[in-house]
Amino acid sequence: MGLMALIAIAVSHWKYKWRIRSSGGKLPPGSMGFPLIGETIEFFMPSKSVDIPPFLKKRTKRYGTLFKTNVVGRPAVISADPDFNRFILLEEGKSVEMWYLDAFAKLLGHDTTTDLEVKTNVTGYIHKHVTNVILNHFGPERLKDKLLPQLQAMAEKTLNAWSTREFVDVKRDCAMSQKKLLNIIEREITERIASPGIRKRDLLDHLLEDMKTQTFLTRDFITYLMVALMVASLETVSTGLTMTIKLITESPRAVQELIVS
Image (cartoon, rainbow, N blue to C red; front, top):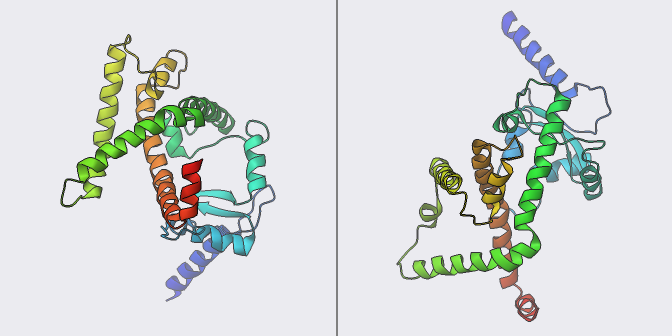
């Protein structure tokens, strides 16, 4: 009994120290959650509501739009303040530096044990370069003039094919394993490198061309970047399109105004 009591006291003390641990700077209010896992479980808990995610709503109500937490084993400060977020974006490379989790740094081929300043400067440069390349191919004008017509044609072709079937297992038809997707992209990269005279002038061509001047761009990096772009856009685009269709169908007047415009 005495040993169990000592263990309970030690765990309680550890949990207390974890929650109130201090740093050299001034931090906003918040909670560090449980030892090691922090508030990771609640942070990633899915919500079917179209409202603000419960994790964010609960904490902004208690602590305000700026609060500290701990997710995926890392202490963090989360901001729900648009003005502060804009300030951070404008100060990138000045008073703040871009930084990623160790898992992403390893994907980029960086040694996570190296100096933090060097690591953040390198990942910050990579982030800026990749962002500029992506915006060059997926900017508003290019989306409107080239990509949207292609997407519309693909959607119409798929829906027409589905219309002749008694039922459609959408999940099975749309699902593709990461391994299969990686193989397709790797094969496409191999074919394009083997045929340098044939160019489609798309994002992949741009990245392959930049391999000649940017040392961080490797075949593995480009492969995983292409997959990451698909995965990252899946949740936001699918949710956005679903909500757009839902809200438009509930407002016939909005539909008419969109048709006119």
